[in-house]
Length: 135
Image 1 (cartoon, one colour):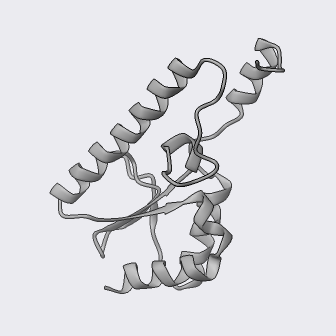
Image 2 (tube, one colour):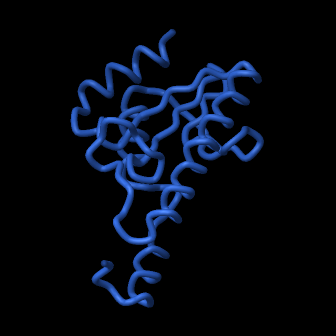
């Protein structure tokens, strides 16, 4: 049972952003500190990837574990209320992510996905970023 009244739940949900999220900002700071420059949310590419490295033809997607259904993650779960709605919504998100990634690959782009839960170990993420961007 949801403990918030519908108008409060609606107000809370309206505050959730799709860009400039805390996990995205962490990755952006790490990449910038490494000396790489990027473009943000390029509309010409499928799914408007979070960070776009045009010259390298690479993109980085920063995904929230709940919203994008990260497997084996404690933050990725189906809420107990309106479960059918959430199952469909989260499944659509995962399908859209997979479709966009396929389209990017077909256009010759390389894709790296960073999950929100992985940002707890920023040193490890920095190594992954460096390896991805330097090859």
